[in-house]
Image (cartoon, rainbow, N blue to C red; front, side, top):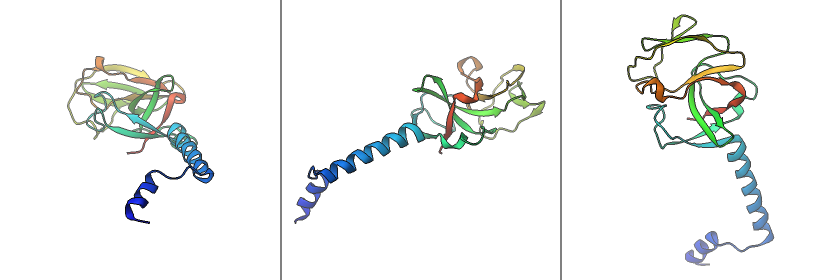
Length: 166
């Protein structure tokens, strides 16, 4: 068999029953993996810059929160509308914590939180509020944008899909 025939056979195999069974199994595994385990995310918007760029791609792993709850600083996918629309946000406060933004600084339970992922100065002010039970407080990393342009706040834990892989 020549090299050209090998290449042709590789790209256009014979449709044998064995090949069709393999094709069905691979398709099923890909559907389960990318549909239910590691969900692909296309990032649209600037609220998570510079950590995640507009137009970039990531995977949201669902296994992380099967046996645990989200932790502070986790970047999570939050179901916004149904199963198709997700927001990528950072968890900054956990249930029953008091959160506020004062002169551009994040305060949780009265203590200023160091946020190395926020690169640009900002002047957000938000009065103190307590995070409800079974909720977390999420916000984007790009605080240079005005507060009115962000979708952030308390998110129910059951709406958190998973954590980003990178």
